Length: 380
Picture 1: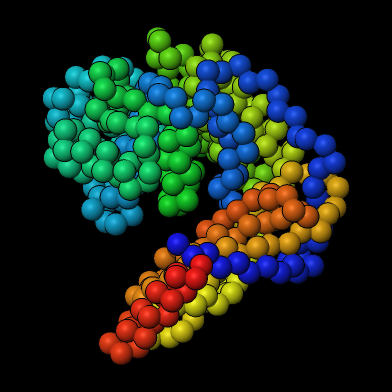
Picture 2: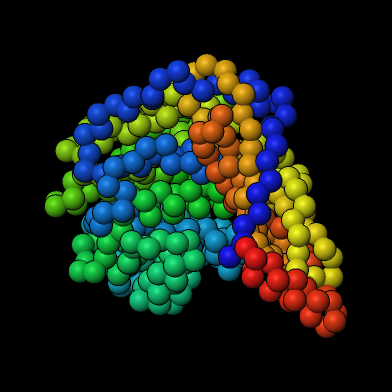
C-alpha cells in the first residue's frame, strides 16, 4: 500500500512544552502487574506484564457497571425505577448490601451499592434488570468487551466471583476503566463515595486512597486468594486525569501504597498539553473515486499529548496519511497517523480521522481514478 508523508512545525503554542534532559525513573512497584495512563491523551506511561492473564475478581464489576450506566444513559433503566430482588440475587455469595428477596429498591440505590461496596447482590439484581438473567447479561459483557478491544478478557459472571474460564489483563482493565470515565462522566461521583448505607447497615468503600487523597475519585478494588489484592484507581489534578491498574499486591495497605506511587509518579513526571482543538483541520488528504478530491483530516475531539517534564525543546509533527483513501469516506474514519517529533525522535503518535463524509464519484470518474491508482502502484 502506498503511503504519503506531510511534515511541518507545530505552532508556538507547543514551544513551551518541556522535555527531559534525562530518562524518567520509574519507582519500584510491588505488584504482579500494573499499568498507568493519562486519560486525556490515552498514553500508557508505564506498565509491567499488562497483557498477562489474571483473575479480575471484583474488578469484573467495571464491565457490569459500564453496561448498567449505559442503560441509565439511554433510558432503558430509570434512576428511581423500583427493582425486585430475585432468589438468585438474594442468595449470592460474597460482599453484599443486604438486599431482601421480593422487596423493591430503586435502581440508583442498587447501582451505588455495587460501585461503593462492590455488592454482589446488587450486581446480580442489575444484570437481571438489564437482560432478564445473568447468563444473558454476561453475553452482553463479552460482546461489549470485543467492541472495546479487550483481547485478553472473558467474563463468566457479572460479580467477579471465582469461575473457571473467567480472566482478564491489566491492559484490558485499563481500557475498560478509560471507557467508563470517558463515556459516563456524569456518574463519576458515585465511584468516589466513601461509604454506603442500606437496610440499617453502613459499609465503607474498600479503596483506601479515597480516604487519603482528595484527588482520588474511583474506581474499584478486588481480591482473590491466588491473585492477591487488585486496584483500579483514578485521580484528577489540575484538569489532568490519571488512571492506574495494579494486581497482585500483598495486602489492602500495600495495594493503596503502590497505587499511590503510580499516580504520584505519573502526575509529577509528565505534562499533558492540547495539540489541536476538536474539529481542527490538520491537513487535506487526497481521496480517490470520490465526489470531492480532498477530505479534511484532523480530530473529532480535542487532541492531547502527554510528554515527560524537563527542559524546553522545539517540537514538530509529521502526518503519515494512509494511501490510497478510496471513497466512500465517513466522518470519524481513521485515515492517517500524526507523529510528534523532537528532532528525529518520535515522542508520541495519534490517529487522525476524516472530519467529513465524502461520497462516491460518478462511474466515469471512478474508472479514471482506478487507472490512476493502478499506474501509481505500478511505479511505486
